[in-house]
Length: 140
Image 1 (spheres, rainbow, N blue to C red):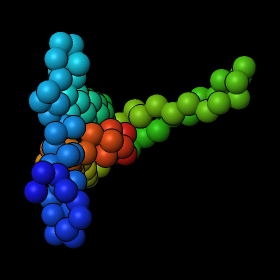
Image 2 (cartoon, rainbow, N blue to C red):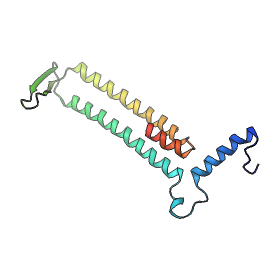
Image 3 (cartoon, one colour):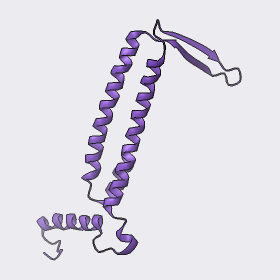
Image 4 (cartoon, rainbow, N blue to C red):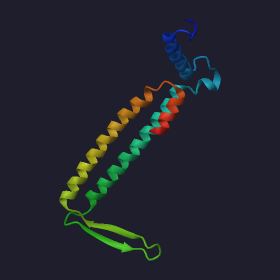
């Protein structure tokens, strides 16, 4: 077809081949050949994985904090900062039921993180256009 877009059915295929060639940059030489769509996709995936890892870290920190608090009737102390007028709270003890709920919440957040990794990876990996890859990485 020699990249002729005059046929309606070949126009879609020609656009796809052009996008793939822009993504792979097969004819690029030197340093330009290093910065291909593949490298951009890997960078986007690493950023995505780090964001999900941060969420998992926060979920684990919350659960560890709840579990480290002594068991007993839930007691909450309040203290007001005289300079900023902000109220600070401190957990003195947590009921067993709330600790169990914290464990269930942790499981829910971990399952959501796994689902986000799977869906986000699939979403980024199957993006062929470099411009769309950048936009999708920012959107995630």
